[in-house]
Length: 242
Image 1 (cartoon, rainbow, N blue to C red):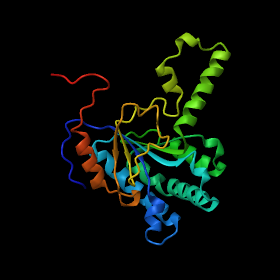
Image 2 (cartoon, rainbow, N blue to C red):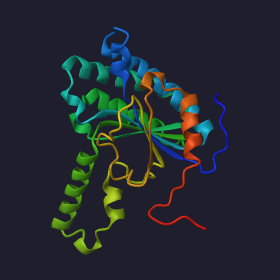
Image 3 (cartoon, helix red, strand yellow):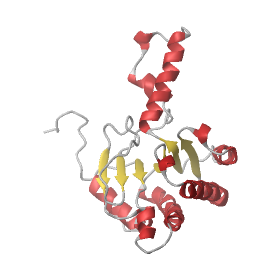
């Protein structure tokens, strides 16, 4: 287990943009899907280590609405990896007290994958040691658009007064309704973009960009990032106390 120093400021919700799987494999002369499989193994390690670091909520970006632009071979391979991960990890999730949820537009996913997703959500619904949220076919703008359409429908049907529309009402209709906003967003692979990930929820999150490719991202590096986070001052638009 990584050596974790007590943080001045604890972090409960960490969101991770897991980037660099394909590059990791390409750098070794291997097919990109090898990197994605290695990345799935890394997810298992981070999920296992997270609760002992004080993380209660972990959200990972697995497949974006833009990732459909990749080759058919890679997309199908990724979907197979997702299905295999759910099937193989269901018992361990239950044993470790991990609750698993999914966010994103499921309508475009294969029906079998949708059933697997719903099944593990139901099976782990009673657990709370770690709340794991996986974003599949997810995009922040798409999420906000779908929430806005839902609100517009409620207004049109007379079930919602436009004057009663609040930030809380919007947040509740996002895919993450009922989940806390992330304290910290990490992106691996050296890229410094947020890539349409949790753009509403991360308005006041702290960000950390690491050059490490996701398959090489270790629990120890996560612990080091959390330690740095503990020394940050989060003012949320206010001024520091004297």
